[in-house]
Length: 579
Image (cartoon, rainbow, N blue to C red; front, side, top):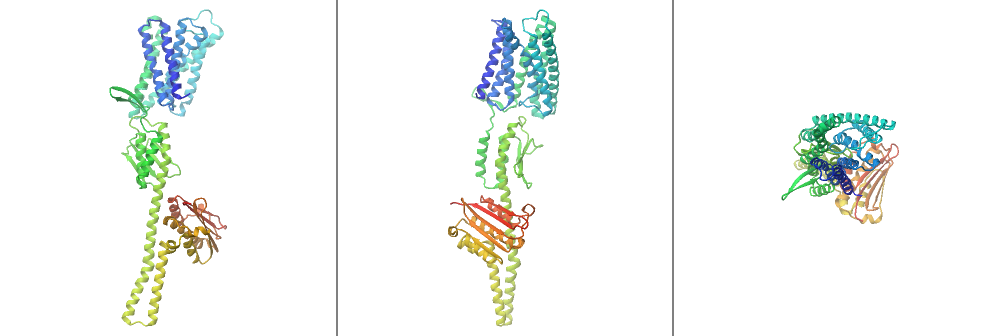
């Protein structure tokens, strides 16, 4: 059964019992006070149906439906009692009044506004209240109490025990109601400006309900002399809370319910914010249209702010970079770390009500693309830093190496011209020029080797490994030698292999190095293994490999390092390629 159908059924039973029971009690034509009772009692079921059918995830609507159902059932029992209905059914139904008063005096204010306890500290109050309400109800049933049919004869021991249980349950119910009311007042006093207005209506509604209960007690004790007070008390008890809840929900958009005007008609509108799927779809489109990662983080912050309807939202990266959408005022009302320690999302308070668990669910859903956007921003930042470091390295190598050699060569040529240099000096200058050319070629190979551009990845790796001073083997399947890939893929894989073999020489003290190139399952793989001294990857920085890992990650690939002291090192790199 769907939640909407269930809500409609419960509301219909409650409303039917309220109307039929009230009219059975007085008969037709019914006096004005009976119609007033119906008018004031029906909004409870109607409001519960609206909330439960449109926002079934919120428990408060189902609580109001339960109150309306119990009100209808016990009113129907009172009507049956007035008409001399069957005793057991009358006793059970009419004494559900204790359940109704317990729910409205305790649980309706306690679980306001979203159907959840304010904190774990209120759990004992909830359990004690439930036990007290049950004791009060069972006591009345055991006594055999029936409205319009006073008890006669000597009460039995069972009836006396029921009377005692009922009185004890009623006393505890009153005490718990007072405790809950005091807690509600405290929540009202401590809440913010917007929340205070919402809680103020609930405080007023509960106060009016208690005042109505006092007026009812005058009628019960003083008899018909206080019939006017008793009638006003009943109407106040039944009608004050639904009115207070309706105003708090609609006027202050407490549960994302608002009044809209379409033409000349008023409409109730529920949860006008976009759904999670709509937000994720719009955010995905926005991120695709925004190439700059930092701007993507800004779009993410704007999506959080718009989706949750908060004053501001901020996304903070792990390196301290912070992007804020809106004007940041006051502390964050909700904060959620992004998985993997990549950063966190914060959002300020909402101007029209408190943030709920539904808002937290939406924020958790947005944390997935948030993690991707933050990871992309961090990756691009690292790549930019790596490119800048590489540019400075090349600049330094040119300045300290080739540039100084060229300066020395020019000075030698000037000296040779001025002194009329002989064959020995010219031979020396020729050798110096050849060395400078060799150094320039090696420098160019470090930037982008010509063998990679002309012969492909396998040939470039073989050429690189052929100059190593230790025994090195390069193996690859024959079809891979003729296969060409994009410049980005070939460059990333070549420099990964180059860095891995350089590390094996400089740090591992390897005697043999084995390089394997392959392409299984749509992935181009490169494995570099050595028999060096090994190390603990968790305790050692990856140095140049970290930059290459980011480069591979940007291409959709990855890099892993397997090593242990005394067991050599294996570097595995891969990127996705077309078959």
